Image (cartoon, rainbow, N blue to C red; front, side, top):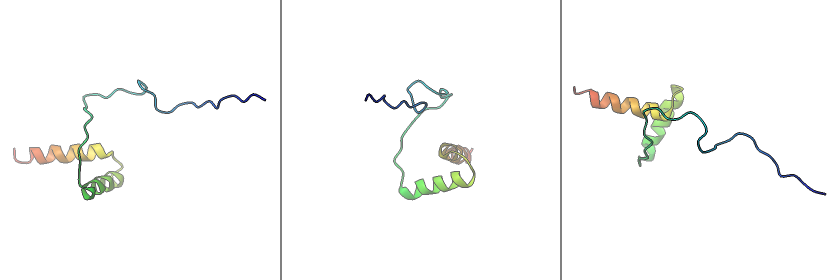
Length: 65
């Protein structure tokens, strides 16, 4: 009895999806407490973690100008 391989559809594929627009992917090492704060804020405000960090950095660097 021959068995056919299980076919899967969808999922992550290189080149699939919408390309990034004016963003650069970076990795930074943060204290676990900071990461938890970022996650909590993002979840409470239904936002991405990146948007929380971007807003914080934008506001903190523009505050003195």
